[in-house]
Amino acid sequence: MLHAANYIFLHPLKFLTLNAYHMRKIIFFSTFLFSLTFLISCKKDSNKPDDTDYYIEAKVDGVQKKYTANTMAGILNYNGTYSLSMAAYASTSSVESFTLLIGRTDGPVTGGTYNYGVSSNYQVISGYVPVNDAEVAYGAGFEDGPDPALQIVITELTDSRVSGTFNGSYFDEGGIGSSKMVVTDGKFNLPLHN
Image 1: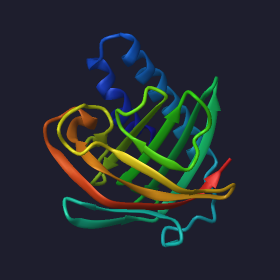
Image 2: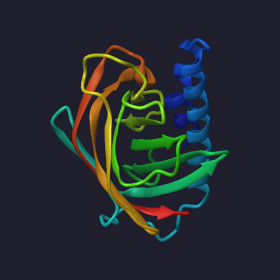
Image 3: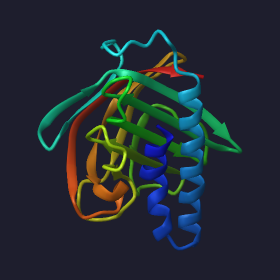
């Protein structure tokens, strides 16, 4: 599982130059991986693959997808960088999944709208593995351009769950390639582990 996360979120780093903006991204990605490790280590055994109360779903290039296995979300404060990490999988034995992350440097993640490239105080990124192969990874929130930017909206955030919407363009090669998938009507309702 961490192999997929490493590919999705670390593979693009080899192309970055080390200016202040990119250093923030590196710190952010490191926080994400730490958050992902936290989420994986504390997932509950009671989360069944067919538990449709918790999910991430979206239309990917117009095709409806729904992920209900290993659903999880977690909040982390790592040296003043706050993150909300969310994930759901196609099955308990698959890497086919959606992951979403909001990170803030100016305070905890709260309800509201988070758009890619709008603020230097927060960052949004997402990964999508459309098949059970970690080498086929799409990412959003890594590249500027004319395509619809990643947007994550938190509509409810309680001590036990998080829900909201998301959409944007996802690019291959972990988010830096030229082939894209457009994600629309994304929704999530996930158990929150603190």
